[in-house]
Length: 356
Ligand code: SAH
Image (cartoon, rainbow, N blue to C red; front, side, top):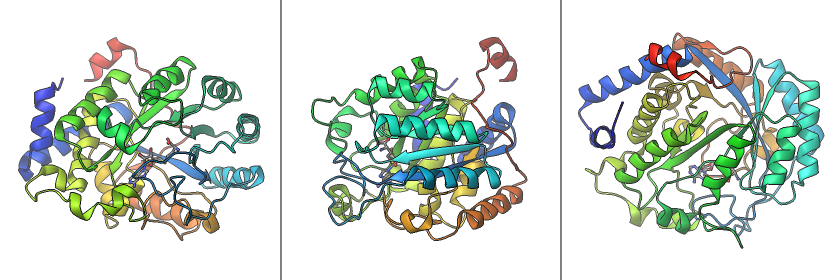
């Protein structure tokens, strides 16, 4: 088992041969615990309204230049049908933290998707109250994604200011609530945030393990020029010998170490990573510990407006083109597309021992 010092050593490592050994070990553990299947989760960005003021995110409420949209239930149901047609096992409904998404609306949407399709439903709607989360779970929602963004609470408070009456700890409390409600729970962080340190990343990894996450999403921070953090990006550049200056390699390290610490977790090779390295970032993520990709199913007319950061890949392709492209890339890696919902395995501790 990797201790904190070993994690920090890996995060500092720059020798290509040593890093190859890390990639190899992560790939081996991935194969042993979650196999060669790559699960496709169809992403539907259901609303870009947001009440929050996060300094890194292009959807932040103060950004008045962004034209806001909210999909109708029939739009989302069309996307879900498309997911089934394209052979995906899961639909992920993501949005800004939108108060206009009423609890009853989400509840009836989840219920309709579950009644009409065999899909697993993942929600990623930000910080909502326990009653709402309970109601959506009862309606059939299977999973919830809520990244804690960084374990550095001072940095978190700065870049993700609590909402009125809320506290900076809300996400950690909610992750526990979600687990108690029976959701499969996912969280994660951004990598390369201004002010973030290797110690923070080691803490992030230890928290993933402690929270016993079913899903772990890590991706590079991508500066958006129309946000406070993005405006300062040029000034926050790191020294070239700072390992965090290379956000791409650091993301692979975080994927690989997440896999070693949490062998059974579902770990996506994220869109942000594919945006940073459009040529083969997604593939390298899959070869260094990841086992999930999230093709975009949002109707193309709205996709550009879900602008967390600029230059997102796959922004103009139709869902069909996107699905086919990913299938080709997965096959080229000698892997296969996962069948069924691809839920996280809950392995009894004794069985875990015998695998590792
Ligand atoms: N409202 C939901 C969904 C937010 S978008 C929530 O708050 O959970 C999903 C994720 O995109 C965020 O959790 C964040 O980690 C990531 N993200 C937002 N802005 C980003 C940026 N500029 N660069 C990289 N990732 C970003």
